Length: 259
Length: 322
Image (cartoon, rainbow over all chains, first blue to last red; front, side, top):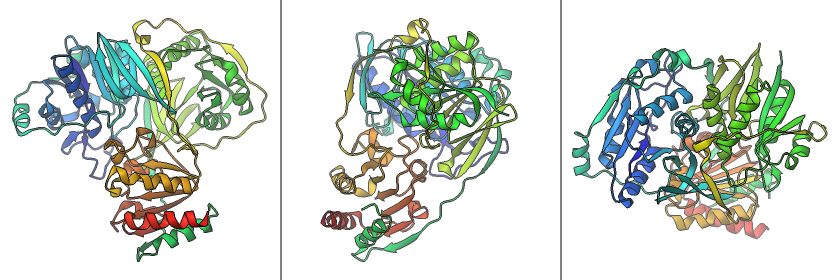
């Protein structure tokens, strides 16, 4: 079974984020594999393995032909990657991203299943997986907490407000997975060495058959009119526990009349 | 200048209209002359409640049993829009089904969707929405320029629900076109997880635990404290990812947004991921062994100490008072 995993390469979340003058997120430093995507990569590797073989292919969109995050996922065991990198994509919103990733997925022959995280850790729109499914006209099950494939059908436990739904969809299909769905492996030394020579198909928007003037800021259909600091919350009292801090908490709660 | 018409995606569970639906209706009433709901189900289930909150009409698909709402409800909405019933703005809640519907709709209408909004205004004849970024430290305002309908997804608790005194909304049927392969996913069975006490996003008190608890078994005291305070237990993403507690416990950017009267964070350092989901709480108490933990920057009462010492004594004191 061939699985495609959508992965995002993001600025390290441990670093403070910053915006460019045009209000896009600063992405000129080193980019890393979004941790949210490591679950999809692991899931894909396990599903291909369980099916008795098949390729796991990554698709990603990033500026400056950035591949460092892709190498991490390749080191985990993915076979190859398609990377879309194009200056025309600056300012791309969720819809453009979905159109681009969908076109990149079409370059991968015989994709049975497409996996994605529920949302990225930096932009966190949470709509891209479903938009990709819509562009490709595929069935989808989002927010998966358990995934299995048997007899051309993907079975998914989908998170709901009150529990979960047992769902299924015929392949090909798209599934978005929640964090914790599986335990991502750490790349082995051998994996890291092998990843350096795995193929990364680098393409532009035009290579995908899309119009560069219809994506990014040019085709966004939205404009940022203001970015300003949010009202800050003031810090209150901070005390060191001397063995009686619980009393302080009880007094505080008493004062609020919640007890 | 007001908009002519706003659609609010209505959702319900177990016969109760979702709080987010009523919150968005309150906001929608301030924006448009006509406020209508779109509902993937039997419109009679929600007509009275959404009517009392200002919706004049519910466009309902009828039961969608065994189907995932995304592709079907979106297709029904697109058909209604193409039939001439177009709103200026479609408001969708940040829910599992809401994001599916918004995603499908965006592609089918070829319109951008702006997510994670906490405010909306009308400027001239355009819609402007506000979204917190970088853990809620900055607010980005985005204007829709692609023409109506604007498609915006809102975070829970962004608005305060308020009844308008309206009568039941008129129910209008909308048909669901065949969506082919896109609609082939099925819901076979629904599992409702048993839980006692208030819901995480509705509780007046939330007690959350994080990695500072050390191990999964130590989460029990968070459950016990939540129970003693008649609140709900919550968790940081770190321990959800580690599998200590289910995803439904998660508070933060990728989990639930909570705004309780009291939020007690134990062993949570305060990653921006977490803070964006709880910084709207009225009062915050934090216990962490690291005096430099970012959570202390927003806590009304911060305790620098060991959760394994403070929490058992706190539980005992609360139980003694009860």
